[in-house]
Length: 193
Image: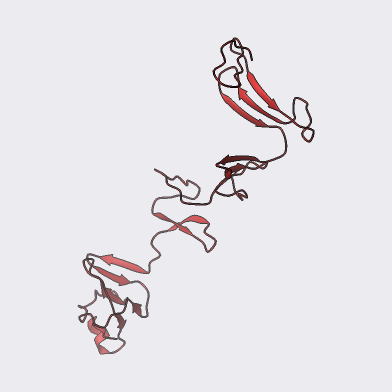
C-alpha cells in the first residue's frame, strides 16, 4: 500500500515525513480511534506499539510467552504475573547495579527473609580483624568449623577483654575457643575447649 515496489508481503508506505500505522480491531475491542491495537511509526520514525484496550501485551517466541507488559505497567520476563515494575523469573546478568535509595558510604546491601534488599551498616561490631587475627567483639563462645584435629593453643589475646581466636587466611580453621574466667584470663590467654 502506498508503494509500487513492495519489499514484503505487506508493505505500507506513506509519502513524506508522516505517521504510518497499522490498526487491528475486532467486535470485542470496538473500531473507534481509541480501540484495538496500533502498530507503526510516527513522523520522526520512532516505532510505536499501542494497546488502547485495558489488557496485557504478550511477547512470544516458538509459541511460548517469554515476557508480558501488564495493563498496570508491570513488565515480567519469564513470568506472566509480575508483581512489581520489573520482575525477572530466571538468572540476570548486569554490568552494574545502582540502588541509590538509602545508600551511604560504608553500608552493605542485605536482604530480609522475603528477599527485600536494603542498605545496612556493614560493621555491627561483632568482629574485628587485626592483621591475620580476628577478635570477637561480644562475650561468649566463638564457634568455628569442626575437625578431628585440634588447633594449636592460641597466642595471648590483646588487652581488650574480649573473646578471640586467631584466624589464618591461608588455611581453614576448626574447633572452638572459649574465654577463661579463671586466673589465666588475667594473663589474656584462652582456654582450650
